[in-house]
Length: 177
Image (cartoon, rainbow, N blue to C red):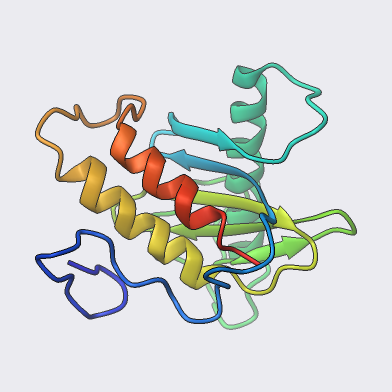
């Protein structure tokens, strides 16, 4: 079942079809890292594929990333030119409330962000030359639903330890251009 694209998966394959333009069979791996947080800020999954320099311990890294997302969401809602009620900077927003950001780019990387209605936050850090990764994040979320949420052995809000999910995630991430 596809939660964002509107089509359903076939019984022969649990994997949803790869989104167009994500470079299936493309030249190499431009994804650096993936974070999945729940609504409480607990890091459910951290995967890295191409991160040559590690400057923080994992716990600090997760807190810093979640804090950045919290601040960016609050900031974008505060400067939204279409909403009269701005609220206070730093006040938590509900999923879908206020305006949102999808990505930002530096000279060395691009941070791509998606928040689901249930409060799951997916952050994909890619090379700066990659394009819009919203479809890729939707695809990764569909993998999460198929292999983690539907897994009767998975306990919600605990770190993800599902080999099928990580195998299919790694396989898909290798196709990103």
